[in-house]
Image (cartoon, rainbow, N blue to C red):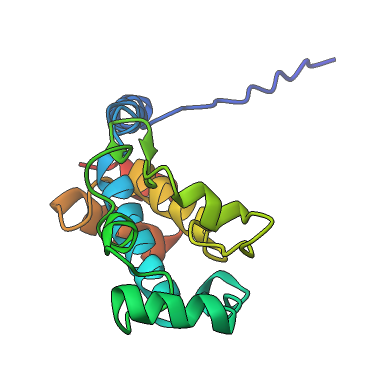
Length: 180
């Protein structure tokens, strides 16, 4: 009676290329400042839209001033647009520079440190709340996608970015991405 032995041979290739690629992902995960700068530009644009549409961009238009206060404001400050007296709050929110605004490698913060901004945001018993600081719809998802794209493909415009993007969308094979 003959005994037949069957062997299965498995060969793994591309391990070094995968390790190199993963090192690149690790390096790229050390800084997201480019994506945070995009976020600052995008939020500044949305804030400008919010002021120009009198709050509609934030989801709910700002309440109109009562007639007595509006008359007083015109007498004392001229016919300035709603929510603009000195221009400091507007300037802070449409530039997102200085003060509490910071873009780091792994974190960012945006807003204003003007004392009276909280009264506009939250309202008082004499003044209705007006949403001046807000997060646009789908903003978190778009920022997350940009960070993920940075991790996977590398910085936009570089050779590696173009190569990785074309190989992934051309063949759908991760091994193509790893070839030098």
